[in-house]
Image 1 (spheres, rainbow, N blue to C red):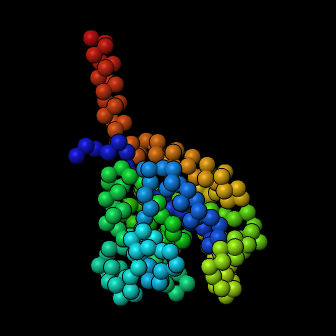
Image 2: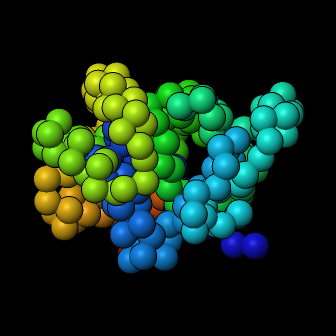
Image 3: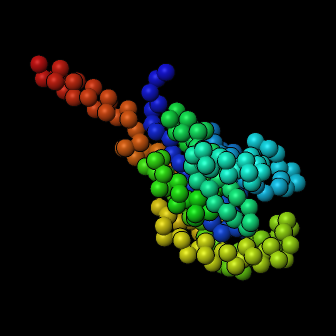
Length: 216
């Protein structure tokens, strides 16, 4: 098997609920074949339309705890009474093959991934809403949650937003098309970083040989 032309990225997208990370994730996956979505495991029940293995890996709390105890999770956290986590093996396989993996996680998950053995491959991006009023409006427009759940998400948003400075990049999702363009620009630039491109060493050696051969 040939050496991949670059090392894969772990692209972390975080935001308070309703700021747009799921929409931006979906748009990126639709246009960029080099990015795949990290399928998380969760203990919450499926929502209407969600499919096992496509949206989440739905597990009982006992099954989830067993995965954590076995060291099979790259990160895990409890959110709104349910557990979420990222299985480690498929992520390691992807970046080893030069493919990028996209994570839609909260700040806790982002911290754990950045602090893991794969941390050097991380590019972290936080998405802010243009206003708190707009954030609440987007949550209510989804029509998926009760008033109590929306209130809980809004209360948690303040804590989520307080972690914005821990991220490499911050996008303000006021205009979705512009936010998507900025997200794609970040990923394009990160792919070109010198340390992510192992083929450059061989190229520079060849260029040096050509200099030497040309001087004889």
